[in-house]
Length: 391
Figure 1 (tube, rainbow, N blue to C red):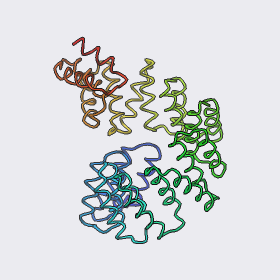
Figure 2 (figure 1 turned 90 degrees about the vertical axis):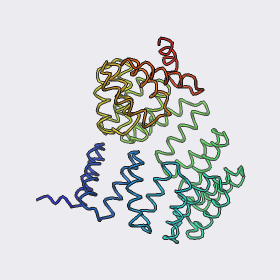
Figure 3 (figure 1 turned 180 degrees about the vertical axis):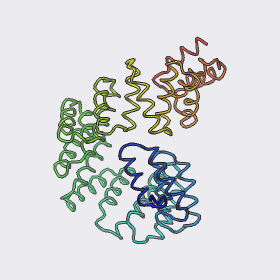
Figure 4 (figure 1 turned 60 degrees about the vertical axis):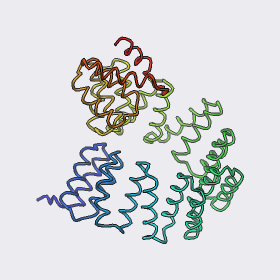
């Protein structure tokens, strides 16, 4: 007989669902695990982290604050609370959480690194430097803290010190790519893509990673050597055909360049191995819609069923429905998308269009006037202006 309080089993089922891209099913298992074990910390932490990963920051914050109320000194709670606050750009609150975490874990170099990173974002470079010194006092070989020191030097416009740190990392940690990768990053910041390519290639010769493939592709493109950039990334994919991150990066690059046929092929290839990969589902729905492919609605609905909280997904589904004349259903979806991402002019246009089509002219006119009067450019601005003129 199934024990519905078996945390381990429900976590395993959630992990299985996630591995297949079934986000809703995973959420249901994690919520069940937490609800059936209200006094257990682990299921609630896992659920809150899942909410955060799916972009449901308010749900994550509400649950984690509740956990903080009963477990104010638990490092796992403090760290998750800090992560959520960072995701919400509440840097001051996040700093407070990580300082509490550091107090609970005085030997944690990682906690000091996080404090340094937040202080750097808040432009308190003195406090950031102090935290990095603490991190390296705790762990003198902590490469990530040394990398952070170089990035801090760049923020302070001390380019020579930044490069010096990168070169020191190369000598002290010759068996890992971090020093050369850092040098490449610094050179890219200095707008020197040619020399950055050489640094990235050296890093790549030490350890081949997806992140370096992307950085090399970007740098090569900036040198004007698009042919070599393309050859490098396609060669990587021929050797690593299941590297979803790289294939998704390439598909998105094609989409940005309006190479729609190439983008479509890459997204379709991703879905062969990851049938619920949300970006691929959503972007394929849009691409199919552009080509009047009847599969557009099916893919948009699949994306929506997989990630109903994603504003981009809700927008795509709602817009395709609106174009097919299912206006009332579309209107509810687009209203939801607007509430989740009110600053997105494309979503605002889709909502205004659907309002106009359902006879709500005044509301539509107000939105169109606002988004076309602003300085912000968006892909549909000409269509928005034309619709406003017609009204």
